[in-house]
Length: 442
Image (tube, rainbow, N blue to C red; front, side, top):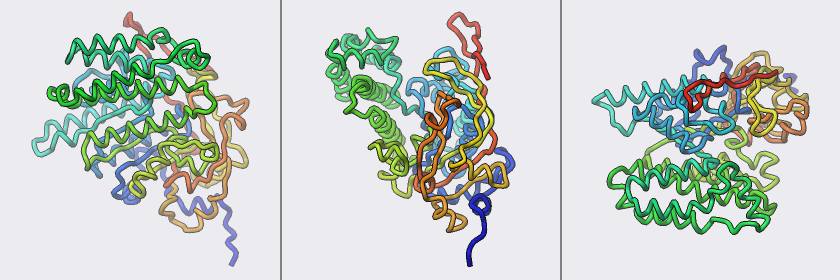
């Protein structure tokens, strides 16, 4: 007999509906995640409050019910270290300090939703520390995966070496000096190398990493965690130098370099935290959905989601997020001011339009373990899917923000919010201790 249900009706009957984030029952989701070692939580924009808040809600349950102790994020390693230190009681409130997350786009992590989540993590770790029956290894850590922090990572490595080995610090400072002329704009470094105006600093930064690794036993005696932090910053410098050096060369794929670095950073944290450790990844859908199921894969691009599936198989569970309309925090150009922009209703040929026509506002749609076997088959043909990054250009939305993908191959689960609101950016504090608020626009 022919099934007369429309696709939105089938989606509605194949999903778990919820009214709000605070009250959603995640027991079934936790069962579907099972004993996964890595859970990847996406977002279809970098400036949507519901995505942060739902990721926080899921992460809390993974911590409390499944023993996850690692949160990794599409954020710079040195900035994320401030959150790590705060939630472990070694620093004042990280997101309200002057230094962290000062690089564009500041609102991506310095926002109210993140602030509330870091307070919860701080309270959780304090409870672990005060409980005599709990192991300190159960405390949660927060780590950045991205590689844009070239110069703050240089500063972090030099600060560390200054504490443990003055002579090595002087040598490293001389070598890193090769990169200093481009401190204000590392992309210019790549341009000068590509146009043969400068030799490149690959050898110098590699020597610093090698020297650091060779002293692992000596340096890590005092603090294994401090050495690990310095080592990751030194690795980041090597990969960032390569990233910027090859940014202007068509034969090199800078996207792949970046996602490969992020995945290697994830693996390094898992190894450092022990063989039984489990990690959550917070990143954009374009990083955590399997690239092989998208136009990215056709261009030869990979991402964390693909690499995690290849490495961990069924022990990796990736969850995409989407919305139809509302508001979003984004800029009109790279480096531009944050604006609160209206999100255009979804394109008629998109997955988002199908989900918008479901007769409920919010739902979880299982795809690896579907509630209805027909749903995967019906959603499998490629359709348009929307991706809003830190830049949003509604006037060219189809060309700028849509790509083709096969959703059930891309994600193990999809979480939908029909209408969403922009994140609330935290005020940023200038060095004179006065506060500077973000400009807003419609």
